[in-house]
Amino acid sequence: LFRGTKCPSYIQGEWLREWSDHVPRAKLIVGIRHPMLWFQSFWSMLAGNYLTNKYGNNPYNIMEPCKNKDGRNCVNGCPKNQLLCLNRARFHRSLAMLGKTELSDQEMDLLGPDDADGGKNTPNNKVRNPIFLYEQHMLGEEYLWEDLRGFLGAGHPLKHDKR
Image (cartoon, rainbow, N blue to C red):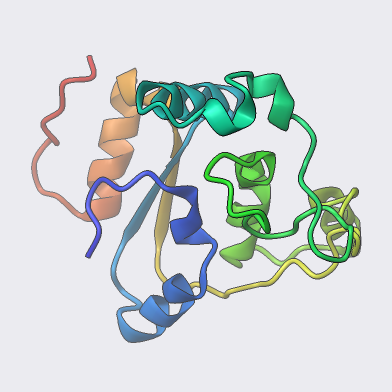
């Protein structure tokens, strides 16, 4: 059971679909932030741990999506095994993979227009668990905490320090 993890790969991988099969009533809370703020935070974390040297200490050196072994842009994860990869900032694709909505062909086209498949092969993991989705800036809003309380079925207000 994860508590407080913030790695986007947790909603992309096979394990979530398998977990959904075993504990389909477990409630999932997914928080996202603007992709640029995510990138900035990730870069700062790497810089703080002296891990930006391989990028020449310049974030502009990794602005182009890396290519996979077939010369196409990466589709899921990073084929170069880079921790910081622009592909990982494509949260819309990860959210679509949860399978909470049926996507039309037009919507599939919008998911990955520059991917080799045009986004058509975005997997639908059909996660059965209920999911509460919020954006990071909503944490300071009381309505978020009320909605989350309802989602969790808590009989009391949730304590938090985001007022």
